[in-house]
Image 1 (cartoon, rainbow, N blue to C red):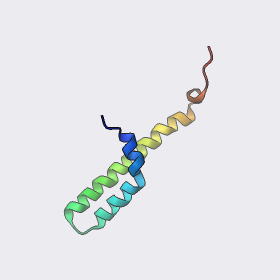
Image 2: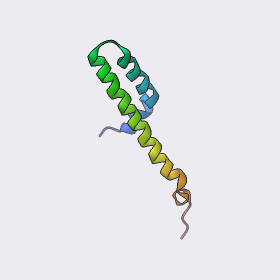
Image 3: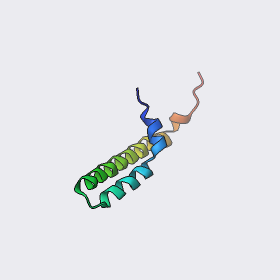
Image 4: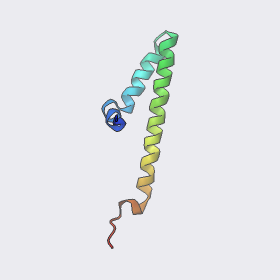
Length: 68
């Protein structure tokens, strides 16, 4: 199975945004569409990662050691 976290770590959201912006401003309808799709994917990925980490930062029990 493909490890998507490894790929996102290698490519990065910023690089995906830059590639999408370059393709979006290239004067060809197909590349503009692909650029828009890449920008949307990067934005959704960034927001999903930001939302996922904010839960762990605000939950005091997430980092607490459990001793029984």
